[in-house]
Length: 403
Image 1 (spheres, one colour):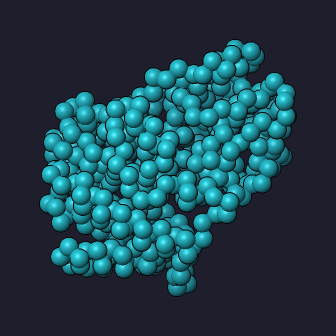
Image 2: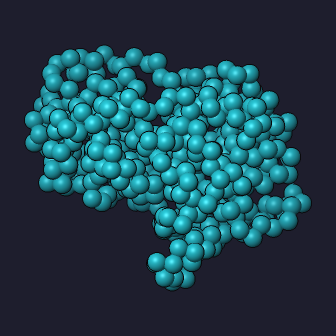
Image 3: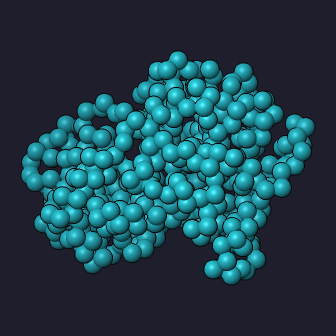
């Protein structure tokens, strides 16, 4: 079987899909992987023997520039991504049997699959954005009429209207060019009738809280055999376990001086700090030997060796931290991240920071709770329940044609 995998999003979208690609290949499938051409994504895929087929602009060029993206930027990006999917997938998916799409609203992907006669599957790493009678939709950029914030049907219709405003003209113009009729509801068309939910059932017990028919496979992990850098190993061995702080692909525009805030807050708890530079470009604030800044690193090897993990609440980082059995402080920025923060708090395995902008006081208070023996014990207990067979479950469903 030939499978084309496509996404446009941060590392939290790339890495789990790469895990699925590896498992599909091990089971005999031919895999073609289309994604944003960020250098770190190219390197990640090359590490596991996969070639990245470029689709659209780099993610870093959009989200990590000096100012945050505006609603106008969102409309420009949406049109670019739809065009890129029709062009790239229309070429790459030739001769394939199945297309699996994920990441930022993959408008255009299903149209290509339909035109080529491929089976199309949407994969989600959370239920944020999926129509539900239990969750209010998140806000999207662009104009929308005012509706009663308690009327879920009206809110979800507004969400569908906003998706159409972002993607409708581009999607339907490209569909017309390849002989397909227009689509009236882009959002629901992209979601399809069924979707894979690549999230752990303990962390994400929401499969039945959406109107989309979800098959929950468990989270998708990409095995990482890289050793820790020598300087990191030496730092870990030089004292008590440090607190890891990293915000991944979040530029942290909301918090100027975030490095000083987090370092001072960790020090206030008598702990050393391991800073992940990430797209916020975190760096040591002085030359004291209790702080080390690192680049890309093996979370699977590192996380079990730290005292706590401060992060932005992306699906991948939350799952990796939970699997490691280590307390978390989640500082959610947007989209699905508040959901993960809330779940971490509900499970008692960490703290959900109130809002996206940490201060010395708020982060110190959150760390004080996360570092208690009670939170540590709870985190360790829950960590032992996280499933690790998600890519196997998903790959077999795809290859056996049972989904």
